Length: 197
Image 1: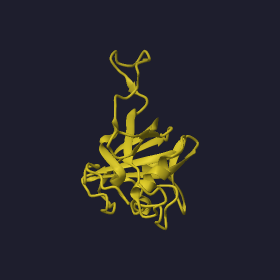
Image 2: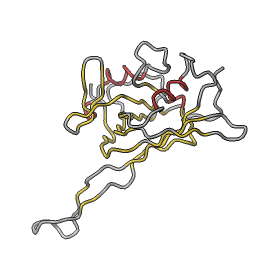
Image 3: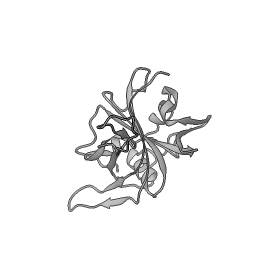
């Protein structure tokens, strides 16, 4: 039986975990037709993974839409202060600094399913995608649309490149069982990316 969460992520948030592969230091989304750079994601790439909400989906296996598995109280995904370099040349203004790395936090907790073999469960999908460390993902976050709404041209997303860490089981007395994943940020991200194609 699938537990009915009492508090999940806001109904106008979408979180995708898209499998990634680095080529010469650039993270790329993995698709059936090839690799797509993180800063050139298309509607087609996002919608390929957005419909995957269970392990039983035809496209399931390496990524998916985990929005409905995530607990709002255990969700932190956003940018923090960027790293700066204040080394100057003789021609730079005295107070100039250069931004070096985009820093962000990606800490998510999702529910476990009572049936770990369920093929129709977003909770099992969450567990399967985060059960091991060092798995690279592009984390796509969209705000303002239900997670079931297809991605479309003109929508704005944030893209974060991170690897999984060891998952942490969360067991509270009388509470639902959960899995926490504190992703390891790789200092590559694309904030406020407006989909153009």
